[in-house]
Image 1 (cartoon, rainbow, N blue to C red):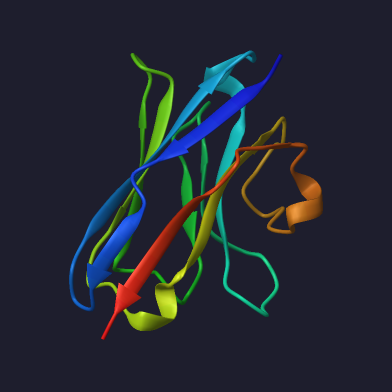
Image 2 (cartoon, one colour):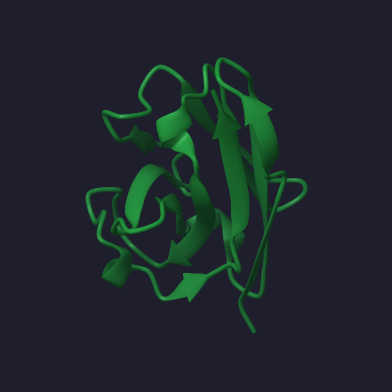
Amino acid sequence: EVQLVESGGGLVQAGGSLRLSCSASGFTFDDYSIGWFRQAPGKERERVSCTLTGDGSTDYSDSVKGRFTIATDYTKNTVSLQMNSLKVDDTAVYFCAADDLPSCKYAESESYAYWGQGTTVTVSS
């Protein structure tokens, strides 16, 4: 059974940092696409970052490029999202998702079959 568990959300002031973690189990971890998505109230879910665990390639949305960093720990089967220079607009529920995708170009949430429960990030002004 595929399981994804996010952790690390919380309340932070604008300009601060948070590190989210996604712990994965139940699939071949080193051959999957892992995406970090977020959904703010009243907005559609958007992918902010992706990594292919098979080759380590990464992708970022324009809204977070240069501020967020995705990283994989193959010893712990976790994918982290380091979020720096946080803005109020980064406030959202953050989800990690996984699927057997060949590249990070599949950015739609419908492309991912497996999802975690989400962790809330609130950035105050």
